[in-house]
Structures are given as C-alpha cells and as structure tokens.
Amino acid sequence: MAETLPAKRRPRRGMYVLPSTFTAGNMAFGFYAMTQSLQGALYNNNECFDRAALAIGIAILFDSLDGRIARMTNTTSDFGKELDSLADVVTFGVAPAVLAYVWGVRMLPANVYPMLRERVSALAVVVCFLFLVCGACRLARFNISHNPQPRNPGRPGRKYFVGMPIPAGAGVLASVIHCYSGSPIHDPRISLIWLGLIAGVGFLMVSSWRFWSGKEIDFSGKHPFQLFVLLALVGGLVWKFSEYMLISIALAYLVSGVLARLAYRWERDHRLGAR
Image (cartoon, rainbow, N blue to C red; front, side, top):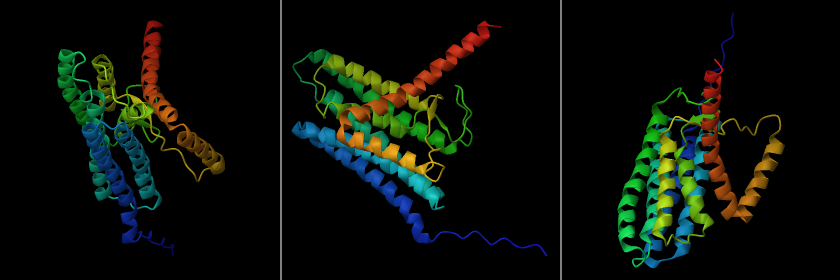
C-alpha cells in the first residue's frame, strides 16, 4: 500500500501579519518623507529635505524585506501583494515626486532668472507627475506579468527585472538629494538638468530593458558567511559614507541597465553586419 504524504502544514494566521508589518513600515517612511518635504519648503530647512531622502532610502530596505520574509515564512498572499503595490505607489511614487519638485524647483530664488524660473516650475509639475505615472505603470505591469520578456540579453526569470523597479527609481532621486545634504537647487539651469534626470528615470521604469533583481541572493547557500560579511562591509561603508555610497550604488544600478542595453544593441548590429 502506497504511503500518503503528509499535508503541508500551513503557517499560523499571525504569521501573515509579519510581512504586512514591513509593508506598513515602508508606507510610514513614505508618509514621513512627504511631511519632511513640506516642512523643508515651509521653513527653508535643508535638514528636512535630507531626512526625507533618507526616509525613502530606509523604505527601500523595508520593501526589500517584506517580500523576502513572506517567501521565507510561506505567507505570500494576494492581499499582501496588493498592499505592497499600494505602499510602493505612495512611498516610491508620490513621496519622491513631491520631494523632487520641492527640492529641485520650488526653492528656486524668485529674483534669479524669473522668467526661466516660471517656465521651469511649470515644466517640473508635468515631469514629476509623469514620474509618478511611470512608477504606477511599472507596478501595474509587474503585477500582471507572469513571464515578461526583456529586449536585451538574458533569460527572463528571477535574475532580472524588466524595466527599472520603482524603488530603485526613487532611490536615484533620493540619493542625489542626500549627496547634497538636502541643500536645494538655486539655479533654474541646474533644475533643467534635474528634470532631465527625473524624466530619464521615469523612462527606464516603463522600458523593457533588463535590470538585475538580486533575488538569487540566498543566505542559505553554500557560502552564507562570506555573503554576510560582504553585506556587512557594504552596510558599514554606507553608514560611514552614506552621501557618497548611496549615490554610487543608485547610479551604478541605473547605468548597469543602460550599458546592458547598449551592449545588446552593439552586439546585434555587429551580428547583422557580419551576415
């Protein structure tokens, strides 16, 4: 008589609250970032902008943990996925869009290139809104895509995202602001460059270019101690030199997707030219 396999034990109901708690923390830091952005504009306080940028960075850490904890505890659910997406829209869509507008445009002096300032301010509203829309579309596409196909080399799956994730996009903007210790832009011409960066990040989020997912990192693998030491070293450097480390990591991640796309284009053109 064949043996019957024991039924897989379902986790307790209370365990489902654990990943949602990290999602709520993600949203809390996003809300805090918005309040600090408004206070920075109201009181012309650079520290408020810096705290807002750091809050978005901490929220990225919470966002990376909630899904991993849900998979580790086998507590993934449709409710958790929807809650995570809504939290990401708030924290990595609305919060960085507000911060980017206030820090990069709203604090421009009224007596420096007044006509240019007015036009840049109007353009900034559109660009920051498009950043929010691109981030929301990126999340919507991720939620409905079961096997997205990148347009540059690499098999789709756990190893790659299709398009820059919205937390990474928010991290690029936040890291730039933190690198300047929250000191806002005072020249409309620099604001145009800032808006170009915002628009570029928005494009990368809705693109079909390949970005590393990091999901293959496994602490239960063959060399967990070495991996832990490496992450601890990076964490220590970030803690000590956060202004330079965070912007280096964020921009390196952005450039990695762009270089992968350019390399694919060059390889494809070279292959077609050889025929």
